[in-house]
Length: 492
Image 1 (tube, helix red, strand yellow):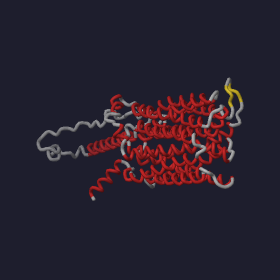
Image 2 (cartoon, helix red, strand yellow):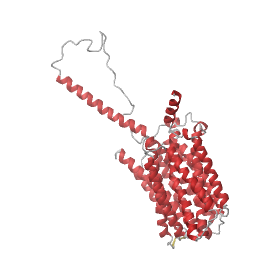
Image 3 (cartoon, helix red, strand yellow):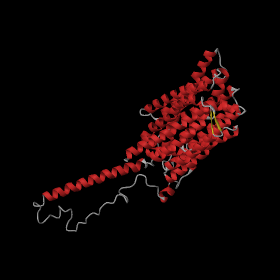
Image 4 (cartoon, one colour):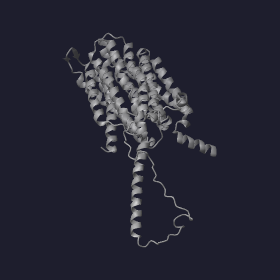
């Protein structure tokens, strides 16, 4: 199998992983509130269950990232992480108590931490100029799962049968469904995924192949010329023509440009190379930089606001619009369509403008959305139709700004942090997002009856992030571009 086909199949598998993570979210979130109500859970318990998934992902993300930096074996890590997804969803279908439900999301969240390894892998295997486009495509896969998920929920809510000692109904069916999908994914990963080499090594290997071919062609041409001129060569050759004045011309030794002229693209990392990955690595020097702090703050605020909004959406629609599982599934479906359109637009826009421009556009949308929700959703005005319109505008503005902020900060973060420790760095970034997805549901779950306080905090965080972006805007570029800007300023 050639390297291009291997890369294509590997990317397809990664796209499926993101797709299934979106499907899992979409089939569980619309029904989990009603499921908890059947288990006599208090409203705050919804925030606990949603936060449990993020808590375990927060802890496992840096560990998986560190593992991938050490071994560069992402395939093995994915297979290991999927086991937690399988077990967690199996626990979910058991559904005996609210504490088992909480534990099931805690276990499944460990498997979700593998995204840090995947983003590190994608950073190493893509060129910087293509990174925003690639990240946008894979993030769109997750949103496609969010769109497809509600369609599955329409059929899953009709389930009513027994599987041995377990009752499969509209609440436990999502656990069974996702358990089967993650099992199928294991086989896909085994047969289709390979550990691609870093983009620099791949380019070097391709360049070496071309260089060897050129040298062989040149050598063949010289031999042909020598053979054709053999009869016309003089018996005594001038020393000047030989490039020497009476001295013996030393033959140049063959150039050995590499110890392994035909390296295997999937050879494991040597112990020396693995130990050198974190040599001279300093957490403070890597992460306590102005531009890194801004991007981590963008990660935190975006996920905090997103999960807070998602937590309060289902109780809000039940309170004001009497939405059930079907209506919520349709709502998430339409929201997913909007987000996919946003990711596709960002994918196109990333070819024409820089990531910091995309980040600024996304933050403007999110600020407008939060101010709208603070004014109209905290205390809805008018009749049913007007209240529904207010709700749709506020929520869909928020999710429309999400692709801009998400893609821009992930792509920029991969460029301004060290590539050798990219898995660990992406794990730290994911942990910051995980902390936000823990605090967001807890904040919203306890304040569903006090929307002014809940939405006010979301608005304050966005305003602070916008001020940080304005102050550090000039530093949100690649290090090479930053050096060029600094040199031009010094020259002027």
